[in-house]
Image (tube, rainbow, N blue to C red; front, side):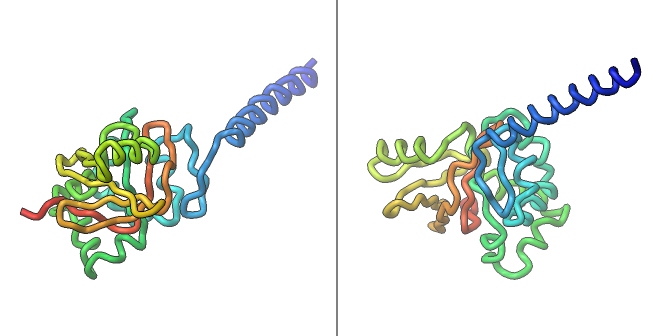
Length: 189
């Protein structure tokens, strides 16, 4: 009798494990930073696995935005990769992640986030509707301008800096991420 129950338990466990693996394999993933990004996971759950976004993840943690980016959102995140942060002047990232600079860091990070879920098709439609440019209001309150150069999608900040979307449409359970090659900055006061 004990052997039968153990066998039944093993079958049930194998069924659930097989179902879980089949679901994970059936999700359409995009590989970012060497890791698959699962649409069933939220922005934070996926971002922590990308080797190309370790600086961004550390900055999000320092700014205390982890909990916010785990909420249902939805959010559109223009996520600077490590190379984008490396373009900043030497020592900038180290200075920004200090506790006394949390407000500035939060402002910069939330400047990369737009409320709502805007994939590249929605952004392209907004650009077309705007005769070549779409102005997006960020969670920080500033403006980003989206535009196309050939088939490439770019965003520009209010200071004239531009950033190319290098990986578009990384869908998450609570939004979409577009990896970008340059950190954009809110308007200087």
